[in-house]
Image (cartoon, rainbow, N blue to C red; front, side):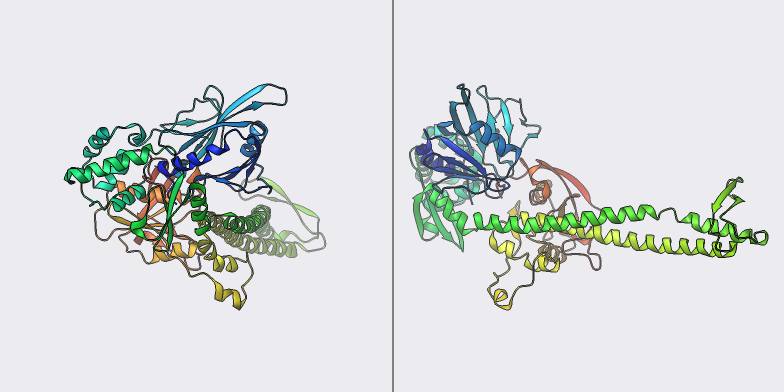
Length: 561
């Protein structure tokens, strides 16, 4: 779903009717999803990197809330306050909610709740009266920004000029200053316009994909006037949807040129798109259910690992059994009587050592008993070491499977995990009738940048498929040391640029467990260097001759994925 500054502008216009209402309750309905219940309406907020959005809702939400430090803080400090204003930060994907009220002690309090809807960098920050950060959903420190408690809040630097404050003449001058093709010139010159929206603008106006300077003056004037009108439409809360090639698209401009276009209120349009893609309570419920089962399975593996490591520690000194047996055998010629212990010369140190014996057995029988203990302990260590590796591999696989489930974006993707989950013993086998209803498998995620195609696995089986079918000269990416998707850069015989490498690494970081950490280390190598061990679980591979690149997910992804 495209949620750029122009879409947000329409949503904020619609949300003005929430101002003046009292905040009754805050629910954290998912890992990155929130619901703010006001006296007469509500707000849905998603900080999920794949679907960040804000919309109004009239539902009466009384479901259980996740108890996290951030949600507890919001309820403790914001409940009971009144929404004084809601405003967009220029044309960027940032919303500011000003809340004021009186606390239990009769003291007046005011806060600003800043919601940044920026893909991997999506965040929610609470500010005091002086603009200092007092709480943040995701604290982070990068070269450009510091989002920690006590720091001064500084919005991210916008890309391009704020279109809403520009006269037509300046819009014309700025766009003529770009030598890029028209759609790219639009989104790279002005803030708040996504790549998809700029393509829709040129499609709606029927403009050729050429450099702005090559446009006829009349067509250029038409474009500039359209951009100026779109940005200055301060009161509109209308968005448009269109079913295009099986996908429901949302846009701040009409999409008649793509097919049947519908006009509706912003929040309704957003909710329809979310339902279409399955990003609603149903997918959250299913995802939480599967992840919960996986976490229980991982906990069982960790408990078993702890038990095996303890047993292994108890048998790691078995070499002494063989040594005692050899000492006894070497001295049998002078050991005749049964005795509970004996002192013999230690060959290693030259000193005498005491060896405890079973006085029911002869010295020869005691020697054989030591050899038996040695052999038994050695076999046990081999078995424990082998079993420990198997259990560690199983835990690593379950952690990988858990992360891939968390990365799923719709019901079809969740459905694709059923085979793996059954094989791992997480869910039961399906009946014949249910098998017939199963959704058709979807292919990998596909991205195109810098003239190259990128494939991103949606599950572990797909990770194996795209890696196995890749050419030996294609590039393979994976977040280093953490669960995540395999990414293949299809080389097609072309030279690879540094930008193409960085984007592939950014995709691997974004579709990994490290996607919320800001910066992620990614390993990459030629696909020919990937080895699938015999009997390995789906998605588990060994790679060699790899290089490592550190990607900053807030800057290395040009566009929300």
